[in-house]
Amino acid sequence: MAVAEGSAGGLISAALLSVPGASAYYLGGAVVYTRQASMAWMYGAIETPHKMRGATEVFAQYLARSCRVKLEATWGIGEAGAAGPPNPYGDPAGHCWLAVAGPTESTRHLLTGVDEREPNMVAFAAAALTLFLDTLRT
Image (cartoon, rainbow, N blue to C red; front, side, top):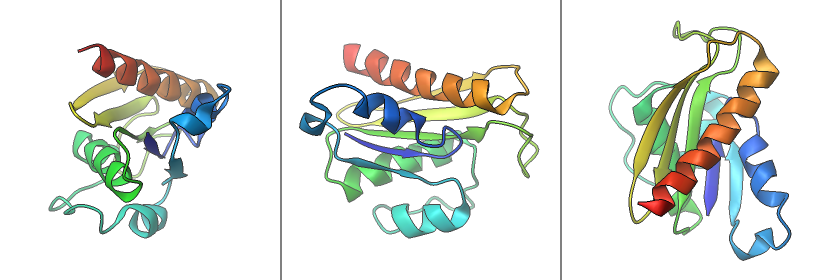
């Protein structure tokens, strides 16, 4: 599996890597917190959606699909949101889109209602892993 996460700041990858034997399934990940990072690490793997912007369902799907292709993984997880404060697009703190790409695909929106950055980062990572498990079960 591969991960491209923004506002979770690496916590999704950290959770996956905390399990002994992670090298059997974890191929790599990137924290694409800025547009520059997203362009450097995700661009070119798949077609970029027209007028795509961060912290949207389309962007989370793009991240999940791109990291999957870049690392030749079976599964990709994408996360994009606003941990806090609100982002430049006007999305509130606690807003996050999550995506899983693989043999099946799924997305989920999370709105925590919390203004604090660290609890939102943890919530985003937990929600991404939950979405992945839910997708595997379908």
